[in-house]
Image 1 (cartoon, rainbow, N blue to C red):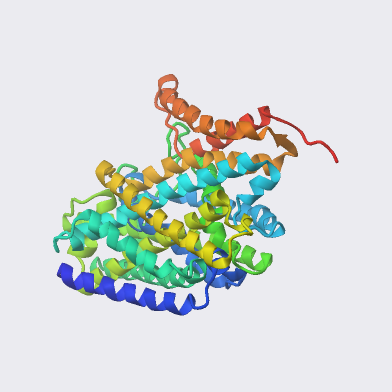
Image 2 (cartoon, one colour; image 1 turned 30 degrees about the vertical axis):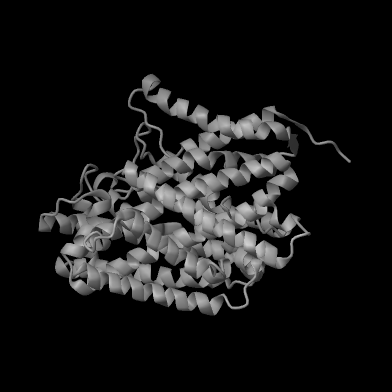
Length: 488
């Protein structure tokens, strides 16, 4: 199918999103933008958060990793389940009790202004790096399969995508995103199912036959369907992976303004908890389906003599070895995986910067019109920052973005984990002026630990558990520079 025809479907899909955005953003104000007027339907939030949690990286990278890591990623997913339950019954009650718009306000109330600003700054850094890495991967695929043949340069493709996202999030923010994410998650999952059904049919396999084939064949791990790895020195060791998965979810969802912004837009705590528990079960099922697809893609690719690997495997097969209609469905599903991770991030970063850094809600002298104007300027600035960072990833061009994202999360979310853990688990008061230095020192020490570990323990590789180490170092630093709370 020609790039021009594929691009016409992309434009049609965007117009559909724009129509939804126009309808849902009518009468919106700053409260609508930040927390959806605290009136979101929990079922819509839960379903839409699937798309936000997965992103385009999951869509192409998770199937691509099956060739080297088999189904090892599911070990992390088991940890995700523990993390979602922790969020539902530890963090959400705290956020609702304090009636927060920005979750980092908790740090200000509990630890002090410097801790508050430090936590918000680390979120802004973390989410900017993570979201632009995800955005880069999908834009690169769209560039390679559509816009490059139309003579559009990579920077222009990135700009076009960001302008599209700005148009439909500019007014409504979270109020709009709750609905657009639901629509996009539907398209993404539909695309996933269609591709699986096509491969099963093309290879004349039933579901049971496919499971058996995945258990008998495999890449570096011996069988594509292998889940549990028992070598403690291996970065895929199940203990490390499950532990890391739990803490990744707690930090990248429970301590992340983008994800929590949607959850706390639900009016009642109990409904928000239903959203989180539902998400835990659904995510486990959906990611297993992604891994199953990854195994099928490798079996089908071997049968067809496909040499593409990693992130490039799924796009190559979908566009070169499947009928035109399936190619269109793949492109729409890919875009549906792209937009939720980018639109929510831009909106959440705008919210955090306005509330936490500028202090929009702490300026009574500003009327609603002034606040809206400032918020819109920040929104545009965040989009420009995204453009810059996507270009940086384009110049670096790392082959596996999911590894890059998990590594960045370990270094940038660790201090947030330590800050919230210290606030929740102790009743001590930190010396607030020391907090920024502690939170900067912890990732630097982690970098040193990661560099030294293989030199002292040959063959041992640190993986996502660096996040836990980072959080623990921050916690210890805060504990050292703290004192008992004075009873009033």
